[in-house]
Image (cartoon, rainbow, N blue to C red; front, side, top):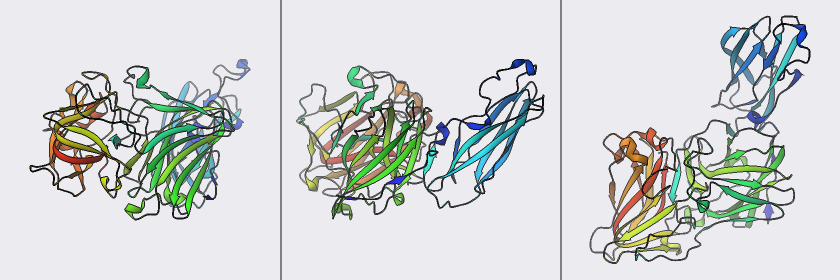
Length: 493
């Protein structure tokens, strides 16, 4: 095995999760309250991450000061602008600043900078807090995220295949893996697993596309590996969500790919501070030397084969939405997001059949996996999320009407009539006006990629309904004989 150089990112990568340090940090009340009537106090929030696209604000609340505090930095990479000032510095007030980059490119992967907030109490005592800031033009780091990407079915071994008593044929299927393996003392659990009953309908983590995520019980000597054969010709970035542990640790993310010279691994070390909310990290492929996870059929020399997580301590953290896509656009291939249909179904009219087609010539050149679905006859199938005939909604998307419902499909010359697919989106309680189905005719023996704007699924659909109250099911009809694959909702390029 050839192993690429390990890359280590500084401790402030997840700066929005880091506590404060300073010459006199007054997060708690002073010990001697007799010195003044109103205790001099400044409460500065956690750190911030700034990128060319991300210009965060921070607000300091204070009381018992002679005047509003100031914020400054000695860094030549940052600029601090005052946005607003409210209240009385003696009785209680707040001031908000914005952090901006002053450069277009930073040579370091991650620069570690500080902003000093200073004030004086009414008794003349100087107090200060230090806000930690990480600055990067390489990585995308954000605490506020929303998903406009969801894989409905890619037939890589993760779609529940319990059709509801119909005679449609189905088969045992391992597909393109998506198997989870652990070593050492490392363990995991899927939070909100439908296997334990119907999941709660609350979006978690907030801003993700569903309700499930993976919690990993890390150990210093073990790892967790997700196997998934993934062809990524349309991607140039990996992103994932992470929720830190209660104590700091170093997380190593390893991407394993098949190449003409054998297996190759690329490692990313993330020192993760203790505590804090979920954060989204985006890592461009250019960050890794010679990383090209593209199958031979798409012009590359080998696909991605697995993603591995390992911690250097006994900690419990969580990950979600491991997605590959385009910088500035969004997801194209779901490695795994842990969401599953709670009730896949299928029905037939006059001898229809459902199966899987794992042969090499049964997938499109640009397909992200190894397997497609084979449909023959006339019938319907689909995927419920939540109860089969009602709430809750378990898929949540922040999309607009230009985003697309997309799939790959190929018809067959073995049928005399047309080969066609009809698709529809069912929003919880029928809200949002997504009340129209869309039909597409397929060419014989030719793979096509269909992109249907969400605006076509109703006379005047409201995309906000896809987020609230959420999506209950995706329903399909078909006739003829056809292969279908990579069924997704994604941003239009």
